Image 1 (cartoon, protein in one colour):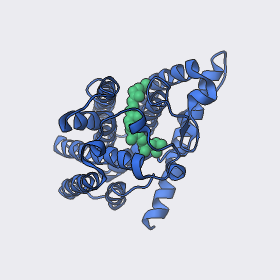
Image 2 (image 1 turned 60 degrees about the vertical axis):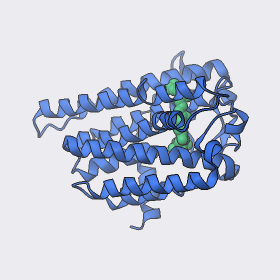
Image 3 (image 1 turned 90 degrees about the vertical axis):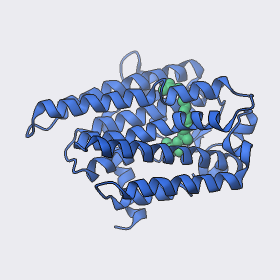
Image 4 (image 1 turned 30 degrees about the vertical axis):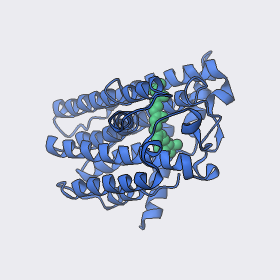
Length: 302
Ligand code: GRG
């Protein structure tokens, strides 16, 4: 299968996994669940669960234990997008080509939907304990799920996505150094990508040296991904990326692009991608599709 067909097939597969784990909209709390499902149903690229499943397969992982973690990671990512679009943060009305959750459901319910989705992610991830394969030592299977849960929680938290985003919000309107911008990008965007690559490998039983290398690949790719996002915010096509451009200038954000310009941004993305691919090639296992996916992210247009 060529890369484009495989990307399409893998996206369809991730969407099917997500559908299995989404909550049913029923009961008095039906509307907030509808808001949660609305945010998840958009045409997201599903990169994080896709990367996670790739590293799982790369180290010989088989079976359904990965499913709850794939869904949980996308839920955490989506909860962050709901909150990121709120009037108090980026104040965006469009995401993935459709109305953002607070425009569709109102601000109070969108705040709740973000919280509900963040919590539901953990309600979902713990279901992996039920999926530990019966044909291997259960203690080893449970230990892997516990370690994966720890990575999921820490990469999302104050030393990961939430830490980076908190600084992004607090420092808005201030002149920042490259080190501060890099800290924000590595955490608010890189941490979930690091976590995704690591969790797949952990659940498949890869050694800690491999998991550490995947963390460093995730860090480089995550930083490159955010710089690419900042480039698209200046040069992108709003229709193609499904959200308005110019958000960083409007919100007075210091980005790698506002510091050094688009050209330098492109060079930095290339440098980071090259380093990530070098590390990828030094791993003990191969995955042609994942390698190409990581390569394509450097030049993505949406
Ligand atoms: C309630 C969990 C929670 C979080 C609040 C707002 C916030 C904290 C964090 C925001 C972090 C953030 C939005 C970082 C930007 C990451 C980024 C580049 C997102 C776009 O990712 P894509 O391109 O989007 O993968 P799709 O739509 O394809 O999924």
